[in-house]
Length: 79
Image 1 (cartoon, one colour):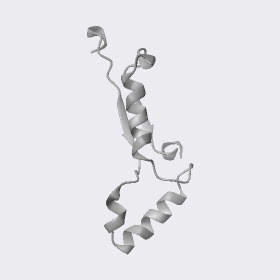
Image 2 (cartoon, one colour; image 1 turned 45 degrees about the vertical axis):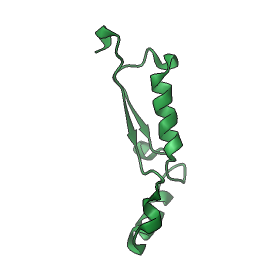
Image 3 (tube, helix red, strand yellow; image 1 turned 135 degrees about the vertical axis):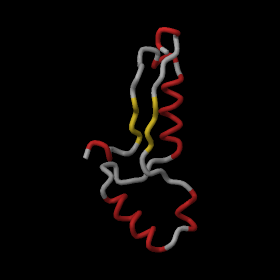
């Protein structure tokens, strides 16, 4: 699509902080705690982190970026 002036990229979010955990069973909360402990940044991804990446890719600042996948996961993919 780049030849048509359309840059195609993707965003791959990691574990994100959503409202799901508020109603999750205790077993899941225990799993979530151990999962967060393994994230290099030490926290779940905020929805705003994902939105910021999408906004960047949609901006003119990213006009030369094509065919990339951006992992927004606090560094989990580095492990």
